[in-house]
Length: 55
View 1 (cartoon, one colour):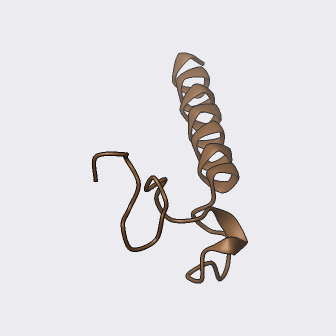
View 2: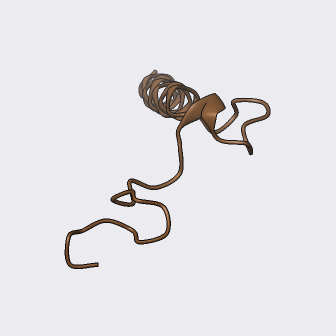
């Protein structure tokens, strides 16, 4: 629409709601926090492997 709003719903299309507001939320495996935690763990494991190879 010209004014940037949906004619059916009135919103500006921010996308699906986040977290528990989204009906597909069940276990939290793919929350931002869980994904970031896995990234940090993966980086830590890679660093540990490099240290073990050096020894």
